[in-house]
Picture: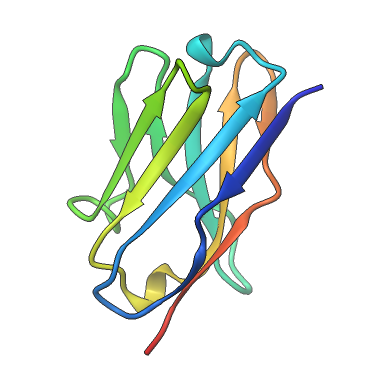
Amino acid sequence: QVQLVESGGGLVQPGGSLRLSCAASGIIFSISDMGWYQQAPGKQRELVAQITRGGSTYYADSVKGRFTISRDNAKNTVYLQMNSLKPEDTAVYYCNAVYGMNSWGKGTLVTVSS
């Protein structure tokens, strides 16, 4: 059974930082492409960052230079370091794994507000 469990969300002031984690089980993590998506209220889910099994990364223009995605294959975990957070980053953040199939976590809420 595939499980992706996100953690690390919360309330942060503009300009602050958060680190999201996604722990995976039930998949061969090292050969999976991993991604983080955000879904703001009333909007579609959008790709924020992705890291391939080979370590290549992709970032949405809105987060380039502020967010960093990384992975630890020994811990079956993918991270999203979010710096210089803005109110418009407020969303539920979902972890995604692609390994021939496509799996999602339940999400973690990030709220950026003063």
